[in-house]
Amino acid sequence: MSNLPKADELASKIDYMPPKGDWMDLPLEIKEGRYCYASNPKSVEYVGLPNPRSWNPLDDDWKLPENWQEIILNGMRERLDRFRTFKVFMDVCVRCGACADKCHFFIGSGDPRNMPVLRAELLRSVYRGEFTKAGKILGRFAGGRKLTLSVLKEWWYYFFQCSECRRCSVFCPYGIDTAEITIMGRELLNLVGLNIDWIATPVANCYRTGNHLGIQPHAFKDMIDFFCEDIEEITGILPEPSFNEKGADILFITPSGDVFADPGTYTCMGYLILFEYLKREYGLKVTWSTYASEGGNFGFFTSHETMKRLNSKMYMEAERLGAKWILGGECGHMWRVINQYMDTMNGPEYQKSHMETPVNPITGTVFEHAASTKMVHICEFTADLIKHGKLNLDKSRNDNIKLTYHDSCNPARGMGLLDEPRYVIKNTCNHFYEMPENTIREQTFCCGGGSGLNAGEDDELRMMGGLPRANAVKYVHEKHGVNTLGCICAIDRAVFPDLLDYWVPGVGVTGIHELVGNALVFPNEQERETDLRGEPLPGKEDE
Image (cartoon, rainbow, N blue to C red; front, top):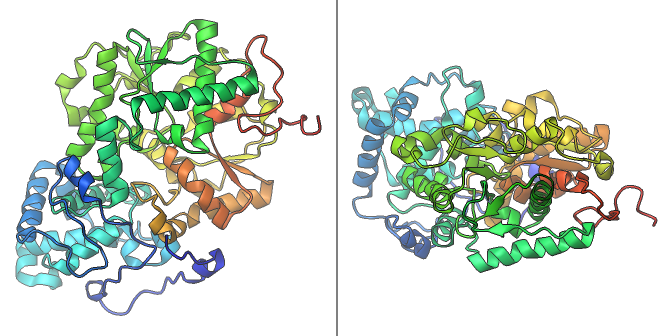
């Protein structure tokens, strides 16, 4: 852990004054608290990535292969040929600066190399210097430079200070998606074994056990059973979920963070209550997999090939179990991979399984937008149930909550999931307040820990990156007395508790299906005294 300064001290460090001289001449200083530990060689080796070895970002020698420049430049050449977007994004930027002040890491740090335009320029300058005639002849006069060790270290430091949230892309007049440039930069770094351990080890765990945390199948089931016992104690209803059941209507997959850590565990309890209600009332068959027990995809932060390998496990499991379609939990990057990459990544042959265009068996709603992916977000599913009057909800059970909603970056910008979560919220919660308009929906701010940056050792970076979101929360906290932030991403639920304690003490964090679990009324259920956290329900405090 780094020595994190107090909030006012960290805020006072932000300096937006431009540095003197050319950005290419700025020295690189890798600062404690602003980088993640290097990847564990065992994890790198496990998934077959190149150059596994122990190395330290603070050392001069990063133990690179002798021909590392050749490897990187060949990799860059291959990707310029293979990915049309990469080639276009290298050529079309006019450096207008429209994106410059849109990145949460720049707003929170003042570091100019965290401007999206300049972060991309780290790669573009090498593209010009190594791949264009003008750059080869004129060098830095044409904005080009050679790939040196110093440049490579700069890449590693700053491409792992981007959470790939894509807020900058919303404001780019040319539609440049700088997150795609970061993705490509990280993929090139992986060619010589430069990753971070908070990505490499979850990827290896997922490859080995089916989830990022390395939870083995029997332990995964035990954890779910433990939640069911808690639910019985609170509601008098004992959910009886099925695992690995062949012939179930729906396979449910959620991020393992919901099974492992608070407050995601309460979201998981909300799922279990909902499924038990639907089974008892409508005979719905939902099964969990103890093998494909992870919706999140940290391969997305590593390489296209690794992303593809981790994505495929969900569909292989659905095929094995004979599920008609997949229902996905509250997750972030899981949905961006599914909606933006999966079709072309896997190819048309992969889609010819027995799986069907998702249909809600209770309401008959056809989720036509999911015809290709065969996967529906649980907020869409629950919103559809509410719209058709299939759930008996008592909103007053959440009256102790004054809620604001954080649009998680990937579901919001990656799949346009904006209204369904709000619809669920407004039907389960009486006190809901939006944050300022330019900080929500497509313009939402990142939590600061996305894309594998939610590590303890880079907490200063995460606090800086989360500052813009925290400021918006602070606004509704002071104006409306908001005491809870809702979100639909497991990374958000992991990042925000510490972030809000740091910048906006007094605001807690919840998943949306925790609200559903609190509000859902079973026929003939016992009178509830507490919510899913064991806290007294409104009106029950003094009893």
